Length: 432
Image (cartoon, rainbow, N blue to C red):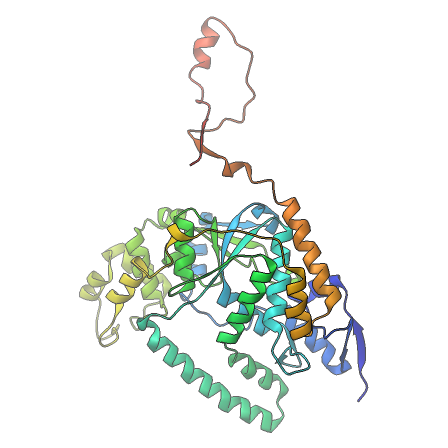
């Protein structure tokens, strides 16, 4: 079969998914011509195959009811920011996005390497923009999630059957679709990414339970600025700021969405507890929901009745039946008081990369191109030199209002009395 030998330069690496294509100790990769376009296609649709997890439809609901709580930012806006990143979500995205012929990328020994490629290049991109990332890995899932995990297992089993049928029928498009549904982040993926991050000098945290909950705790304690994840339940766990698309493909040119929790509550006129109940009604990972209640009706019911207990007392139970033995109270408790990392013991340090250790792991063990790994190390070192200057707003806390007007020359008499009625200039105090 005729093939194309394709050179990969840094610009092409960025144009795929920002995660890059895997190179096995060389600067080219042999690809059948018929598959090359498909290879690029997989990179371009990195997030389209990511299933909805967390809170169903919450992002759209916020956009409809509290649009001012969402800001669109460029990655450059986060220079000097410390950001807690949902590691499992990142690995899942990389395993979906970085593919060839519908399959995850592998080295010559048949080992999956998509997650390592994605983690390496995506992290470097953030570091180059002055971001200080800290990855948070999932711990054991809460008992309440067992039902959802069971459902996911059933969906995987169904996908395996459909994949086998598609392979038998030679339906390549369906083969790719069902293969993606079988993607799962394993313990090996986690361990390899932790090792990679340690060698890169980037800190990571092992959460005792859900990563998003510990990310939210780090934000609330002031350890980091925001939680970066595609799962909207970061807001339900109470993170002050949630970022979506921070690790999305650079080629897609997606603006980073910045959700502000307090503004959401303010604009929707909800308490934190009411917001949690709303999220449970929308659908979460920990319990079922009331039949026939969509997002609009859920908002109306929460505003009218205030909590799920009152809603159950006032709706038509025949038309809108709740699950038997509905564990909404337990789910509410989990969102209000989740098991999280002890923030007081967390010390975040970003260190120099271990270049020789990276070469040993990524090149000698995983068969990546040595030139590219060493070049990546140089970028990390350079980024550390450029990010020593912190953000101005990390040194001061603003109190009062700020006036952008230039100070006028002092006047006397009646004019001076009128001037006193103007805005009081803002004051600064040292941040703790």
